[in-house]
Image (tube, rainbow, N blue to C red):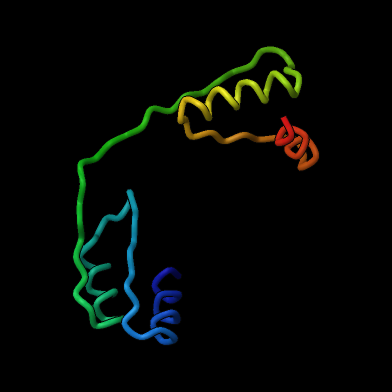
Length: 99
């Protein structure tokens, strides 16, 4: 699907520069060939050293107030952690955002 979208963009804007970032690409040569066929520009792969960020799971054994949750999220954001928060509803998410 990505390549079909790239083809459409390339038809509208000649010689489009395309940058693909991925951590899970198995066959970069195949992608290089397909991209070169789409826009007739040289395609190269730049590989870097593999890395893995640590994952943390927090298990909360009691119900927290919104202010407690907001404080925890705030501390994670300050420490430059990637943070994903699930809430039971959009209303709870909106209330959390106000803290």
